[in-house]
Image 1 (cartoon, helix red, strand yellow):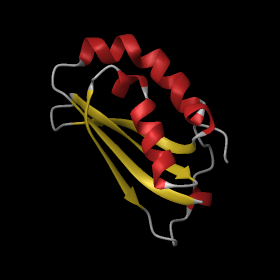
Image 2 (tube, rainbow, N blue to C red):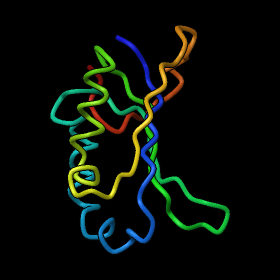
Image 3 (cartoon, rainbow, N blue to C red):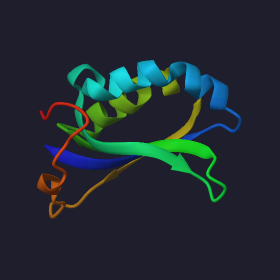
Image 4 (cartoon, one colour):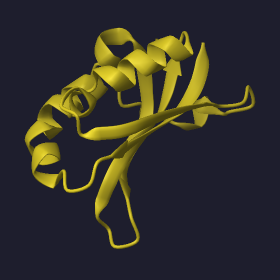
Length: 107
């Protein structure tokens, strides 16, 4: 297993589309993409004015390919809201055990 920082930046002016898809997005996250990953923590990303510009997550996955499938399968990405996805491997020293309430079941 490996850990990844996922950053999804959104196209501008997507507030209405994000609001409409948020329930489906939350189901996707809470299922870990139907078991592709464990989502340890995540949240919206905002700019200096507080406007939403994307989302991030700390993922545990068997592979970077599974982490990417999770990110690309998110309803936000499927609807074209997501402009870019960045996955950054986290070091072996990452202390995942310090996150006590994961957003999806652990793998």
